Amino acid sequence: MYAIINISGKQYKASEGIKVRVAKQTGDAGTTLTFDEVLMLNDGKKMEFGNPTVQGAKVSAVILDHGRDRKILVYKKKRRKGYQRKNGHRQWYTDIEIKKVEGTVSAKSAPVSKKSAPVIEKSSEEEE
Image 1 (tube, rainbow, N blue to C red):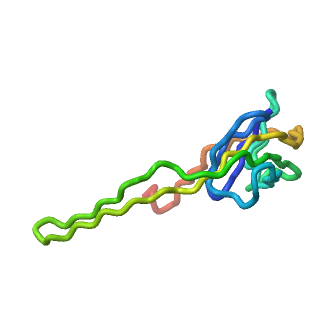
Image 2: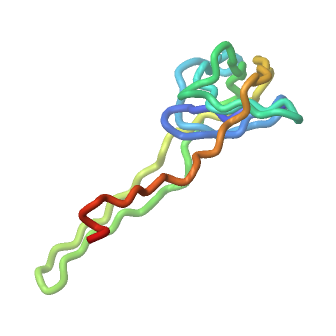
Image 3: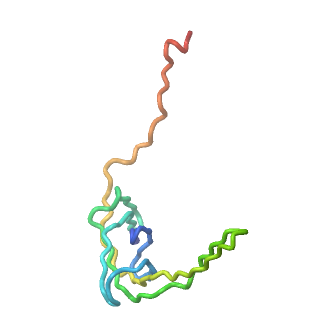
Protein backbone atom coordinates (compact mmCIF):
# COMPACT_ATOMS: atom_id res chain seq x y z
CA MET A 1 0.00 0.00 0.00
CA TYR A 2 1.23 3.48 -0.80
CA ALA A 3 -0.09 7.01 -0.71
CA ILE A 4 0.70 10.34 -2.30
CA ILE A 5 0.85 12.97 0.45
CA ASN A 6 1.31 16.71 0.56
CA ILE A 7 4.04 17.98 2.90
CA SER A 8 4.76 21.71 2.90
CA GLY A 9 3.37 22.20 -0.60
CA LYS A 10 5.26 19.31 -2.22
CA GLN A 11 3.99 15.84 -3.06
CA TYR A 12 5.74 12.67 -1.90
CA LYS A 13 5.10 8.97 -2.41
CA ALA A 14 4.81 7.32 1.00
CA SER A 15 4.90 3.60 1.69
CA GLU A 16 5.77 1.88 4.95
CA GLY A 17 9.46 1.74 5.79
CA ILE A 18 10.85 4.26 3.29
CA LYS A 19 12.92 7.28 4.26
CA VAL A 20 12.12 10.67 2.76
CA ARG A 21 13.89 14.03 2.93
CA VAL A 22 11.33 16.83 3.25
CA ALA A 23 11.36 20.55 4.05
CA LYS A 24 12.06 21.32 7.71
CA GLN A 25 9.35 20.14 10.11
CA THR A 26 8.94 21.11 13.75
CA GLY A 27 9.91 18.55 16.39
CA ASP A 28 12.97 16.76 17.72
CA ALA A 29 14.43 13.48 16.49
CA GLY A 30 12.12 10.63 17.48
CA THR A 31 8.95 12.72 17.34
CA THR A 32 5.98 11.17 15.52
CA LEU A 33 4.33 13.24 12.79
CA THR A 34 0.89 12.62 11.28
CA PHE A 35 0.08 13.85 7.78
CA ASP A 36 -3.64 14.12 6.98
CA GLU A 37 -3.32 15.59 3.49
CA VAL A 38 -3.45 12.31 1.56
CA LEU A 39 -4.08 13.06 -2.12
CA MET A 40 -4.17 9.47 -3.42
CA LEU A 41 -4.33 6.03 -1.85
CA ASN A 42 -3.41 2.74 -3.54
CA ASP A 43 -3.84 -0.69 -1.93
CA GLY A 44 -2.29 -2.67 -4.79
CA LYS A 45 -5.56 -3.37 -6.58
CA LYS A 46 -7.59 -0.18 -6.40
CA MET A 47 -6.79 3.50 -6.27
CA GLU A 48 -8.74 6.28 -4.64
CA PHE A 49 -8.18 9.90 -5.52
CA GLY A 50 -9.16 12.63 -3.13
CA ASN A 51 -11.19 15.69 -3.93
CA PRO A 52 -8.86 17.31 -2.81
CA THR A 53 -7.94 14.79 -0.08
CA VAL A 54 -8.97 11.23 0.74
CA GLN A 55 -11.33 11.18 3.72
CA GLY A 56 -10.11 9.22 6.76
CA ALA A 57 -6.65 8.49 5.37
CA LYS A 58 -3.47 9.49 7.19
CA VAL A 59 0.24 8.73 7.19
CA SER A 60 2.38 8.41 10.34
CA ALA A 61 6.10 9.15 10.24
CA VAL A 62 9.01 9.51 12.68
CA ILE A 63 11.60 12.28 12.50
CA LEU A 64 15.10 10.82 12.09
CA ASP A 65 17.28 13.91 11.74
CA HIS A 66 17.43 17.60 10.85
CA GLY A 67 20.15 19.14 8.73
CA ARG A 68 21.13 21.57 6.02
CA ASP A 69 21.58 20.78 2.35
CA ARG A 70 24.63 21.64 0.28
CA LYS A 71 25.27 25.29 -0.55
CA ILE A 72 23.60 26.77 -3.60
CA LEU A 73 25.42 29.78 -5.06
CA VAL A 74 23.33 32.71 -6.31
CA TYR A 75 25.25 35.02 -8.63
CA LYS A 76 23.83 38.25 -10.05
CA LYS A 77 25.54 40.37 -12.69
CA LYS A 78 24.60 43.21 -14.97
CA ARG A 79 26.90 43.58 -17.92
CA ARG A 80 28.86 46.81 -18.44
CA LYS A 81 27.60 48.31 -15.15
CA GLY A 82 30.06 46.89 -12.63
CA TYR A 83 27.23 45.24 -10.69
CA GLN A 84 28.07 41.82 -9.25
CA ARG A 85 26.61 40.05 -6.25
CA LYS A 86 27.48 36.59 -4.97
CA ASN A 87 25.33 34.96 -2.32
CA GLY A 88 25.02 31.46 -0.88
CA HIS A 89 22.04 29.60 0.53
CA ARG A 90 21.71 26.34 2.49
CA GLN A 91 18.19 24.94 2.79
CA TRP A 92 17.05 23.23 6.01
CA TYR A 93 15.62 19.69 5.70
CA THR A 94 14.19 16.92 7.86
CA ASP A 95 14.73 13.21 7.25
CA ILE A 96 11.62 11.20 8.12
CA GLU A 97 10.76 7.49 8.02
CA ILE A 98 7.23 6.47 7.08
CA LYS A 99 5.87 4.08 9.71
CA LYS A 100 2.24 3.52 8.78
CA VAL A 101 -0.15 4.31 5.92
CA GLU A 102 -3.75 4.18 7.16
CA GLY A 103 -6.91 4.31 5.12
CA THR A 104 -9.27 2.20 3.10
CA VAL A 105 -9.99 2.30 -0.60
CA SER A 106 -13.74 2.38 -0.98
CA ALA A 107 -15.39 0.54 -3.85
CA LYS A 108 -17.14 3.03 -6.08
CA SER A 109 -20.67 1.91 -6.97
CA ALA A 110 -20.91 3.94 -10.17
CA PRO A 111 -18.06 3.83 -12.68
CA VAL A 112 -16.69 7.06 -14.03
CA SER A 113 -18.74 7.99 -17.09
CA LYS A 114 -17.05 9.23 -20.21
CA LYS A 115 -18.32 12.48 -21.60
CA SER A 116 -20.24 12.06 -24.81
CA ALA A 117 -19.48 14.19 -27.83
CA PRO A 118 -21.41 17.46 -27.82
CA VAL A 119 -24.45 17.57 -30.04
CA ILE A 120 -24.24 20.34 -32.63
CA GLU A 121 -27.56 21.55 -33.92
CA LYS A 122 -27.82 23.52 -37.11
CA SER A 123 -29.73 26.72 -36.81
CA SER A 124 -32.17 27.88 -39.44
CA GLU A 125 -29.88 30.81 -40.32
CA GLU A 126 -26.98 28.50 -41.26
CA GLU A 127 -29.13 26.45 -43.63
CA GLU A 128 -30.04 29.44 -45.83
